[in-house]
Length: 127
Image 1: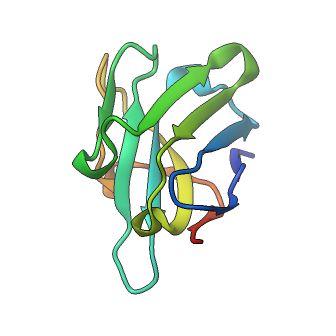
Image 2: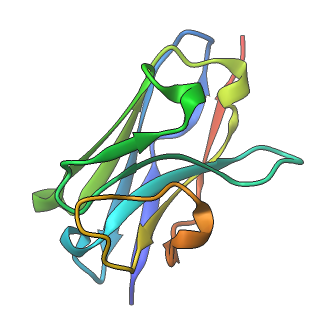
């Protein structure tokens, strides 16, 4: 059974940091590009960042560039999202997902490109 589990969310003050983890079970992450997504109340789910299978290529939505960093440790079957300089507008449920289509050295941000999803973790940025 393919399963992704997110962790690391919580409440943080503006300017603070969090590191989200996405752990896989039942399959090996090596074969998948992985994306991080978020959905705030009343808004559509948006792609935040993605990383290619090898980790050699990453993409970020403009609003998080320079603040968020995606990485992967295939030996631990885990992908991370380091979030720094957090803002109230980053508040959302964050999801990770695996792209089941082989895309070589690239990755995609649109959520509809992803096949396997975790249950999400809440991130709240507030003073």
